[in-house]
Length: 105
Ligand code: HEC
Ligand code: HEC
Ligand code: HEC
Image (cartoon, rainbow, N blue to C red; front, side, top):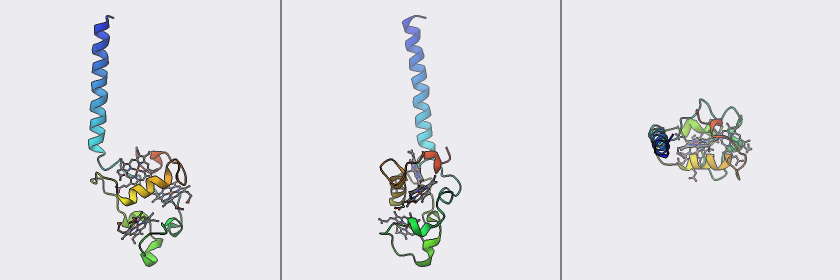
């Protein structure tokens, strides 16, 4: 193979990669979709993980976080909720989880 062919091949492969990334960014604008009941698998008692600074919601504090903080795939920016959840579960937080622990990837 000549050098030219190689360069064409590299350009074509890069093009495909870029298109794939752009496509997945468009599809997952609001982040990759969440799994079904992503929190209950690990958290049984929601009152225990309720942030201390959380607005008082009374007895509803026993309900799942997502019952009030409903996922919205159309939302492009991080919310206070998603930011807090990511912070708690990534390196340097309370524990380190793979993205796929919560997101359907
Ligand atoms: C694979 C297991 C797992 C999944 C799934 C998971 N968590 Fe966690 N989470 C943990 C562990 C372990 C900790 C650290 C120990 C603790 O605080 O319970 C934690 C900590 C937290 C904290 C911090 C609690 C504190 O003490 O400050 C919050 C809030 C939280 N999780 C919410 C959620 C929410 C909401 C979801 C679903 C979107 C979720 N978690 C999904 C395992 C998980
Ligand atoms: C009964 C409804 C309800 C439940 C259940 C609930 N929240 Fe909230 N949460 C709210 C409301 C209302 C606010 C204030 C408005 C807003 O920021 O969305 C809030 C705000 C927040 C905020 C932003 C706080 C700030 O700094 O302004 C975080 C973080 C949060 N909730 C985390 C959680 C977590 C984690 C759980 C589950 C353990 C949870 N919430 C369960 C209703 C709820
Ligand atoms: C503990 C559960 C959990 C883990 C682990 C997690 N996420 Fe999320 N993520 C969420 C929740 C909850 C939302 C908010 C979903 C909504 O409101 O539609 C979210 C939203 C997002 C969004 C949309 C923008 C935003 O911040 O709200 C992106 C992008 C994202 N996650 C990427 C990731 C990546 C990449 C990883 C791995 C490095 C990851 N997430 C790990 C729970 C998690």
